[in-house]
Image (cartoon, rainbow, N blue to C red; front, side, top):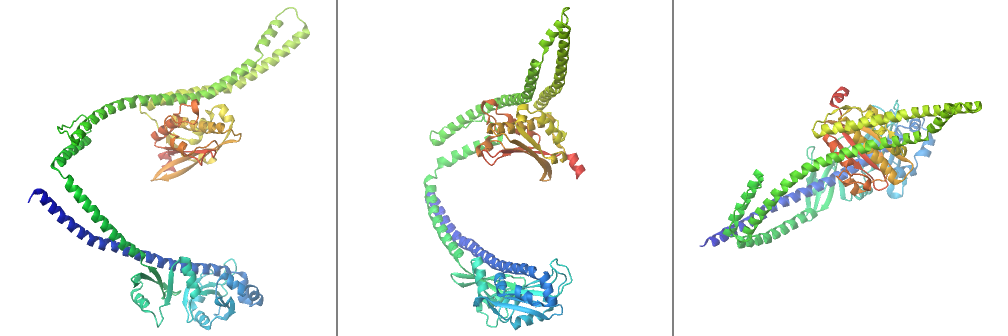
Length: 632
């Protein structure tokens, strides 16, 4: 027998055994899983019905809470006034509340009044059954209340039908004692109630009492299985129908009703179909794979591929792209080997160029970030210098010089002298006012120049990886950042700062970089409002503390009513080179801000409801650990 025939025989027998074993295992495991899924679904539906029944009890108790602790009910039990019966205990009241009976009991356990209704007879008034009244009066548990909110709610078993019942202590409307009696209301679990439960849960349901002498066989089997430890059981009624059973306890905690939910066995049918489809597909696919495998199993394929795989793994482990694969074959595997060698050469050259370019790109990005920040700081300086130049040009210096020259002349009119002196005094006052007005501008310019120097010093530290993190007060940083905004931007917006920011703990950050980040966010918000072209521009700044993974961070939100952003803008807003300002911006501001915040172990992101809806920038920074310990 040839080697090929041996391989075919071994693989064929193996495949046949595998299909047989898979069918048996699959039938047991997968079909068992579908059966468990069917039972779980059935148990969920049984619990749904029990929960719906419990919800009815809760609604009934809530209704009783409106009647028991009520001044009118208290007065009725004490005085037995007929007006209360006429005004409150009519048929319409019971119909609206969907209850079958009202019962009023005095503190001595004596019946005061009982009212009933028959829903099946178009809401006709009927006498409350003697069995119900006897049950209530013979069970002191329903009439004893520890306090004014001690309501007893549950199911009671009566000869005519089980009933949902809620017994409330009667007190005043403020739930204040003394308790002067008991108010009881309830609804029978009749065919209509069972129908409503089935309609609400979209299930086929039925009940049987546990004291039923002529219980059907399937309910009897369920009752024999159910106990305090077993709350659910199931039983196949027919090959196509399965029933689930559960126990409902009465108000005294005793098992009283058995619930049955009937369901078609669609899950099991789908499981059997799935197994048949799976095995058919598996058989077809297996035969195809077997044929393809036998047709392509050649000795000249596996060896070269293994050699190529080992070569690739060695490159992946060592990271050395200079290793080359030596192959003399001229078939497809040989071509693949030679192309792989050529790809390694290109990849090695590309990696070397990329490392060099990333170095220069990092320097260029750093320089661009410095220029962007310095430009933001120089914009208010230029505005203030221009404003001072206009004031100086408007000063009457030239006219004052002419007046002084005229006063130095020996021949002039005394009246003219007085006029010139007055003019000179007025001019001096104007110059004094100019000097006073210029002094704050000079101080601001001095602060801006100092800030530019801090930017350069801070950037120099950053370029040498000497970031100096320190505890910073956000209120003062924010105040400084607002001062650094260009005056024309500040004039067009109102900036609202949440007073709670001043109460937030210090953050751990680098002073210069954090100031630049906040200034950039404020400038961007103001520019967005300018581009939208609205007069009532507003920037709201709020802050709060958050604790995530046992790390406390300060969360600040800068929200404006500017032009807003769409989903594409939100996705690219922190991308290098992306900008919504056209040619007026380098496009690196928010990209630089994001990198700086990340370097300070923080987070910066944006959110917007769309174009025209404004934008919110979220800045999260770690709180200073020392202050957190002190506050903790």
